[in-house]
Image (cartoon, rainbow, N blue to C red; front, top):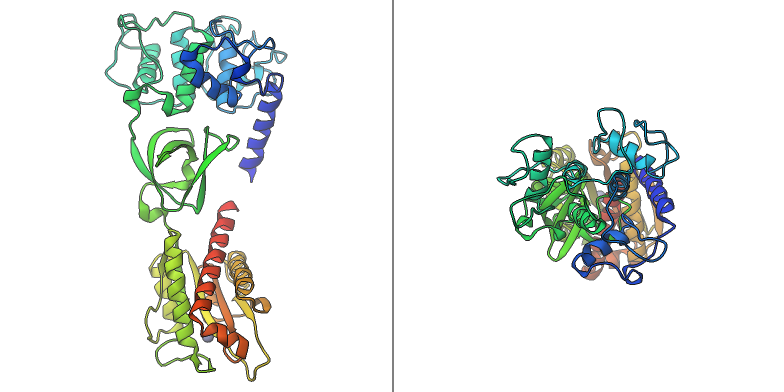
Length: 457
Ligand SMILES: [Zn+2]
């Protein structure tokens, strides 16, 4: 929750900063060179760069050091709130003071030895290389050298990283021109390539690895922050190609979808990405459970559990079952089996019974003194609410009971009673293959609700 609040604050500050020229589209600015149009349009949409009040972009204007810091600050969604800085020539009154200080604190920029930043000075290609390599955390170096760049040193290394990443090019004559000034359009090109691999020089557009989605639904965004627009979504277990990482964000592709996802929701292997739930079909073997209207509880429980397994697996969730056939399994062993098979959640499927026809409906249990009480209650609630609605049964609610498999269980655990085998209407549903399928689908949705809740906590 904290992270979201901070991001919202950043978003608001960026919006305030750029509100003067916000929404000025490329079409309104006639002076954008077609060669850089895509990259500039990308940055205009993200409000990383803005046009001038007279509807021009001024592509050939040089970029000053404070302008560069501001654009990088916007691209990285740094705190741009005007404030005191560590430099003696940047006061809190300067529009760029917030971004300059934020970038300084993140070690993206450093000033000169005398404590000054020279905000009005035009930035050079060499300085830009340093700034961009720090901002986008470029690490890889390659066998690239330029006639006019020293073989070693901080600037040489930064220029190497920039060209290795496919963000900057040298000139056809083998030079880099580190002391040359940089125009707004050239600068835009570098920032766009820093933010988005698709703009980089073709040869570097190679995936560096594979990652698996470890959450139910993961938003893919146009930039490396939650405030960037959502461009698509990937699902649990999806295999993504990884191109680069920028801080906590990874630039990925999934089919034709490309964009940024947060690295917290990626796993290196498919198995670690999977949720594992234990679906426990109550009773079995010599233990029939309840019976009525020609039905045995153990058979209903297993039929619904088996259908549920299939549906969960289609959602990319791994399922383990303490019993998959008509066998007797001790209650303790059901819990032990689930823990040993790395389940993260436990759901037991049962069928209710009462003397006479009167009692009917759906109810779900959890246990309060479990260390997983809150999660167990949520699981029970999501499953119960999906099920009674889908089945059209009476909602008897979510209840607390010290049933063995949910009370003495280290996992978040719930026990659902589908309906009453002793009631005529309920038993019709319990015995119907179609209704068993509806029950499995509803419980599956309830489990997905639960995982989504758990991830958003
Ligand atoms: Zn039972």
